[in-house]
Length: 160
Image 1 (cartoon, rainbow, N blue to C red):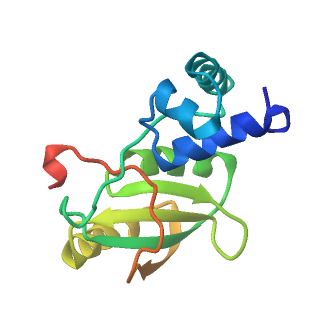
Image 2: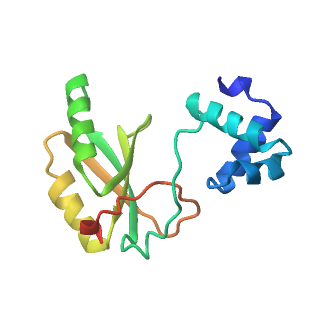
């Protein structure tokens, strides 16, 4: 199953689940006008095909003590296959980095960073990024207001 194989019922199921991913087959059947068994079968097929990759909760980062969000653009000192792989390992080890994207343009990567406050962010930038041997340039923008946020947060107790 691919995106082009989806019919109106599949799209309706995906739309409903994007609003509330905890809907039961019975509740879905009321929304999309299919039987609960058909809804369950289609949902399972969407999961098996990887179109639905998982389920998550929405949360309030401020209430969880992660009130600062920044977008950080990174330019590698000497881009290469080895430095790229090393940088990816470094990124995956940093708890403050919620997501990272290899991009086109004037930077190599954009990092979505969450910290408790400006002091923690400053420490992260100065101690982890600025002097890292792979990183040539760091530019950051602190997010003033979140318009839309669907990223997962690291909620381990040591983050609060």
